[in-house]
Image (cartoon, rainbow, N blue to C red; front, side):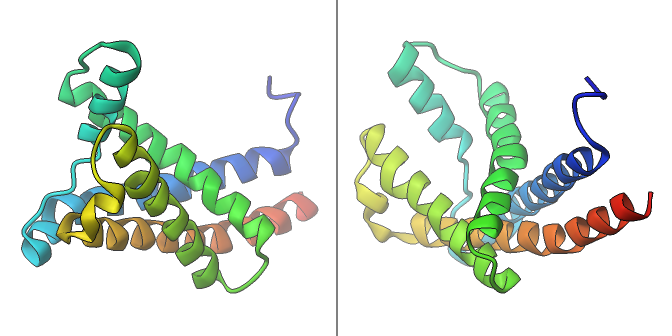
Length: 160
């Protein structure tokens, strides 16, 4: 498999994964520590994973598995979204981060929440407002990390 990917492609994938992982860790810290202090709500997107799985398959996931699924999606999927947004919008890093976060926030609160029976954007209440900060904060961090990692990856590839 290592022969299938160039050194540059490997570095891009690693950069996306690392930026997504750091962004997801920041999101979880915000969700469990900062959000309760600021908004009085703990963000638990694993409950969304549990509800979607139950609706689509009838299976009831344990919370720890749902958390692991969301953490994996957040680490890899959100990193990919930020990377793709960066390709589509070659603009300032913070704009890429904010646009990615708004998109992901809308998908979570405006599409997936209604899919499982909650109101659109969950009525724009405190959970939704806190979720906005969490999603945008996570993707701004990931966008900044990609801006640092990807030029370095390009320089290292051309040098080595």
